[in-house]
Image (tube, rainbow, N blue to C red; front, side, top):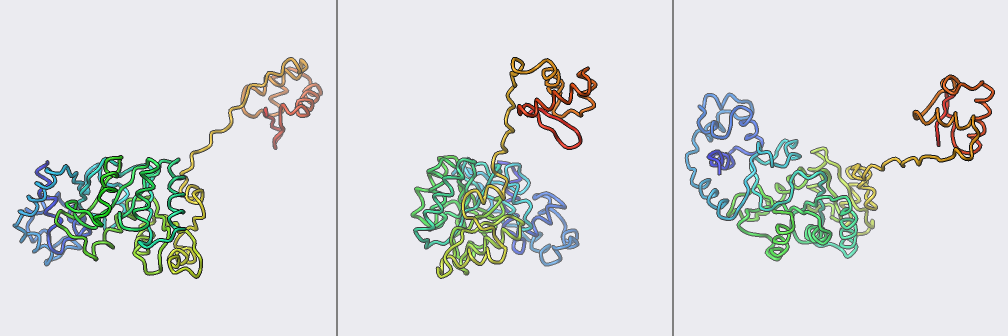
Length: 366
């Protein structure tokens, strides 16, 4: 581990210095230099001021940071500082991106296609079917599935991803020394084993307190290209994630539900208020995200028609083979035929569907 890690961890432990302030400080010096800077220098930085500067210069207890390094080494945790190459690049575009992340797994946090799949903890059978169906179809496009490893839609999304051999990342609202809910321990192990992982900004011994979950949700929204809301009430936690995704200029999708179903009021609200695209099927997502593979233009088969063509027609055909479109004047010049012979040959070739005429007296092979 780099000596810098001690200061990087300690930076996240300074009172009054959150992710936004840490990012401001890092624009002026690296983590170690922050702790050796003079108070007079720090307090002049816009967004820091005297109170926060005093907290930085007054920070002397590095024991918790040292303990965290021991935990990291013991359990093979990968720390990802905001300046590291493996840090989730999409998060860097978020104003409140975490200063430091802790990661256990092998899944690519900068995969080409990343989708957050979220929803209520108390889902309907319909939501379960939709989740499993959509993720099965998304598997064809190799989309990495991100969620919060909670009960309900989160767990279903992770399980469906594993079933379809997709990498899936669980973002936690606590440290990596525990797992909440405990019932998902086996699922979490499978996620790590099968090319996914667990990610958190919380150090070890951090409990899954209620206020941690909305904070965790910004990572779910920020590290993905888009967020898909399967099912949620108007006051569900998924609504926070959807709003965060919108604030980060990420696309949001929502599955429409029945108007009298309380579990669908959140999704219907997002769609009604143009805060989410209506996702009736997988194609709705693929088209908006441009995740469908570009179709290759059909390879034109060489026309072997010389046996059926007259001598003049063969000549015109040869001229048109040279490039995609040819003007009538160029055909006349290159063919060496009279204008009337060229006109007759072209008409015959058009009738046989060998060539087509284009605006501007241009011609091309079919």
